Amino acid sequence: MSRLATLFVLLGFFISARAPVSWQSRPWQGQIHSTMNMGALIEVPHSENIKNIYLAGRKLTFLNSQGVWVGVLPKTSTALFITFKATGDFSIVPLKVNAPPLSEANNLRLPSSVWQKVQKKTNEDQAKRDQIRSIIMQRSGEPPKSCWQAPLKSRISSKFGSPRRLPDGRSYHHTGEDRSAQVGTPIKASASGRVAYVGETIVSGRLVILDHGDGFFSRYLHLKESQVQPGQVVNSGDVIALSGASGRVEAPHLHWEILWLGIPADPGHFLQAWAHLCGPPSA
Ligand SMILES: [Zn+2]
Image (cartoon, rainbow, N blue to C red; front, side, top):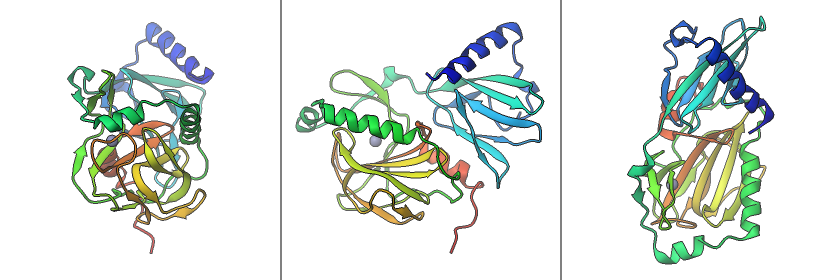
């Protein structure tokens, strides 16, 4: 946890112990509910006296053209929302986060050959995962302006947040959305952006990461092959890869993620919530 985040957590306990914050008294009442689902896109309208807004230690992304602050709710039991006012005043709002219980996890049906392969832990793979982690925490460039779309039209075979259990008993929440796809299906960029990473890790298989600006990323996993190079600029809907069955998979499919500063968003919810924040597609 960064020093800033630690400060906010401590600040949150201190303030809430002294003077409990009343949700109803907040100016964004009606826009945000005090209990939300993990991965929800959070949107706070800007007002003259707001200087900065933080969620779980991360500064929200300001969409200047829309006059709103946006971010994604992490998977924690509670998260803190802190608004700094231009006057120097600030307010803290605790949010309760809903996540499906891991006790209800379904067993992943991984072929034993796949499970054998993904259990190999190498330093090289760890280094790649560290590199990916640092990439998706970066915030550079302008926030996304384009509309978002699903990377392919097909059945959702596993929803975001669904609880799963690995053959060794470890449980986790699904960080993306799985779409069934025969090997070789064209995969489209979810939004305009720049190619931030092309590579392969043991669990993710072949993957492409797009940077959409100011901390927003999308990831495409288990690919057969990528059709883009790092640094390349892509438009929403451009074909960036062919789907496959690489990495830790039960069967061929695309695992698709949208991330904000490393926090996975619920892609289905995100597309709906973002629809009024983007302009008409440019010609
Ligand atoms: Zn998946």
